Image (tube, rainbow, N blue to C red; front, side, top):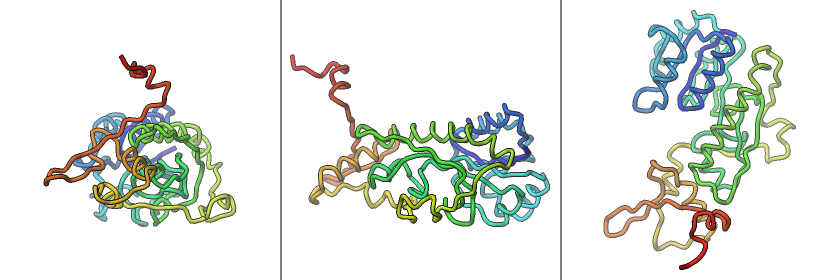
Length: 269
């Protein structure tokens, strides 16, 4: 299948590697700008494409770039951890549509920081492969998988789980996508009636409202622990409090009783 790939991050790299090893034909590549990239060089290397078939995301605003991508005659667009909203003129370039790999169990946690909000809101965590429409993670679903969370999960550990789930879901589902034999399940349809039909959504800046811990405020213990563990994701900064004009960042370590014993700290000397 001829495809144009829009990707970033380890999930983008592993997804593209899987596609090329399968023998599907990548004819164009769109990557993040250097200030937002992860694994960009590796993705470009795996693609094997010449420079004139690789574009940075911001170039998609240029009419000649959209025209060039359209001239590649790709059947489908594939997005994996691509952090930019795509306009309808780009989506319309692909006869089989454009699909996206999202680290959430849609319709929950559309948008950003899905690992954070699954912990704070107590919403289901998972991976979803879906068609892209003009909304943010609102397109018809192809397949989903649940990810089990633990009371000891942090934002970092859950992110790792979500990445792995996305890679596995894509590998399981792509063979059907390539044949065109896939469902299109509307997120507001009856197959989602087990939930509220609306789900949840968050923007990048929503974490700003939870990151600053007010030392004079009252928190329920569960809520405060969830904020601290959700925002524990080294090397990122996360939650903090301010004392004497100094910002102090917090990272939470969580161990079960068995893990504590294995760590050699279960008994006092």
